[in-house]
Image (cartoon, rainbow, N blue to C red; front, side, top):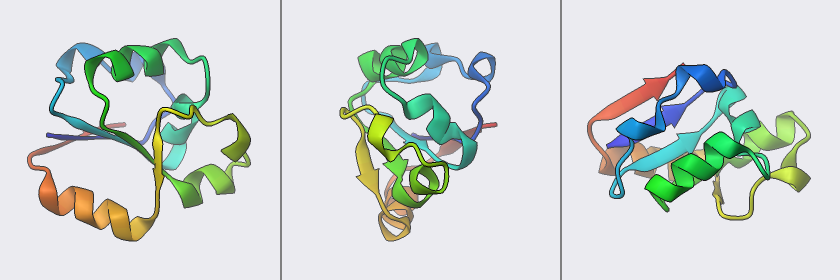
Amino acid sequence: MLHTISTANQSAINPQLISAQDVVLFWQNGVILAIQNNPLLNDIIKKTKHCYVINSDIEARGISKIIDSRLKIINMQQVVGLTTNHFPQMNWE
């Protein structure tokens, strides 16, 4: 399953629904959750190591220097690959 997180509202996300084989993509305002030392991000990474963040969204918010290094930074073309390879999808917004 592909989990897309597009909100910075931490209470809207339940990491208990994420499993080890799932993929998590932080995009839009969700990239705010991808910063270093975020407890929710730590919980998600404990569930799955397959975590990604979109480069254009972190650059647009000026937070590229504080993104957690455990995340893979990808571009929109790579996002298309994630969406075609992982089904179903769940959007957290």
